[in-house]
Length: 54
Image 1 (spheres, helix red, strand yellow):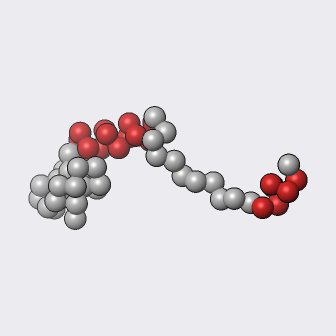
Image 2 (cartoon, one colour):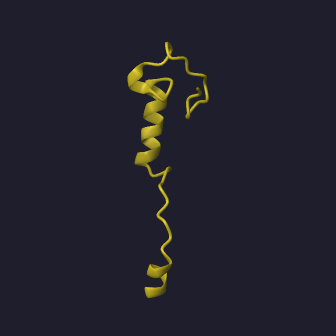
């Protein structure tokens, strides 16, 4: 398994359970920062009916 931030391999013994799926507290904080600054977004499904009403 690889860390989604830095791509380093993660061994079960290497990563602390509170940081999974990240390899470290730093990578977990980077991921949280990206969510908070809206670098990551969840796309809203396009609803054709709403577009037609507008």
